[in-house]
Image (cartoon, rainbow, N blue to C red; front, side, top):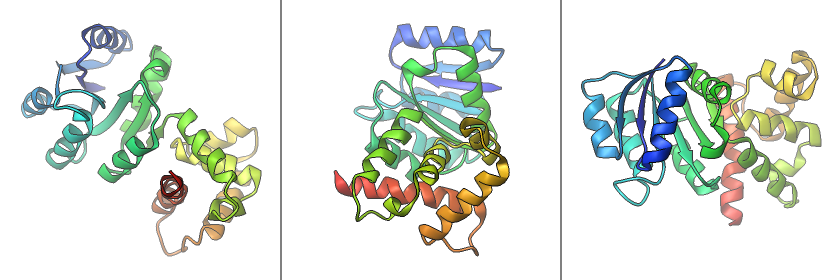
Length: 221
């Protein structure tokens, strides 16, 4: 996979470059800031761009850079890295796009296996959300009985959390040790309880299901 990287921390950037190369990815360009990366990608095509959220141009240069890159290169996957799992970052990321996009903690992508799995899923058009953030958001919505998400059963909320991580039905089945058929039933129930119409494409309903509780969590804060 052709990967572009923007990270203002020199040590982390060099470590990530070594990890990417060890995984067999082609690093087409590397930069310390967003403006430099945008200029480099004008002549060096990539499949996925890895962006530090908090880098030049400050304060959240990764998000600003991503908006520019998504406008100039609509098919470019985007992976955001941060030291912090913040819901307001996630909302801004999902406003940039809901396909081929991801948000992971820096400390969680320190192995070839995890980094490659994340990049492959983004390359395949999925949303990849840091599991701890998805879990935290679902748990917080459980405490609010006025929230529509509270109408979901515990199992349905587990399925929704894994949907928020960008997992496919087969991936959810593997995580919960149930059959894909059972997952399909849970997902259908989630759509009904959240009021998502059947005339909407399944992929978009999955995104809307995730956004429903993300927006609810944001309104609580």
